Image (tube, rainbow, N blue to C red; front, side, top):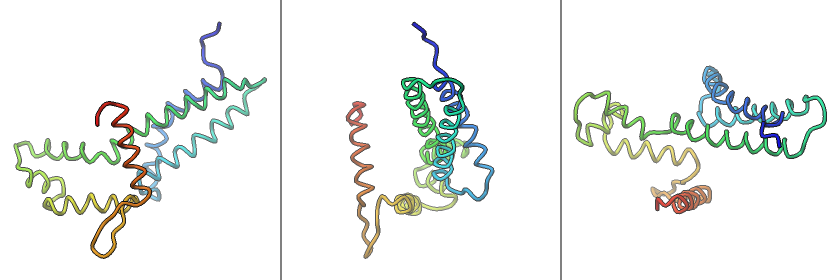
Length: 168
């Protein structure tokens, strides 16, 4: 029994290691402004590269090797997404960084002002609402906000993950 990865799996592992570097490279393109777009473009780049590399392999391709490679690549994309989202959208980490940069204990209002570069808790809440509006998870109309179908899907998914991991 051979326990070494097949050629397609090896390609998937190499591309998995290359994905974070690709994302950092895309950060240099000023035309790609949003972190979400950058990640999607990175994934759309990696997937065809995997297909091209698999088709360029000499010899016969084993179906299970290619499926294993696809699963390895998908797993790597999910793992990179977790780290990418923490870095790109992890406002919790940004809040922690703002507190550490202050170098002294702060009240909650001072902490929010440091994070918002002069704003207050209302500005902070408005900033979070703009992110939810921009992502299409909520919609504002007549001075009221409500969840969209996309927002409800995300809420249900989060509840499922919390339930599955014992967090909620």
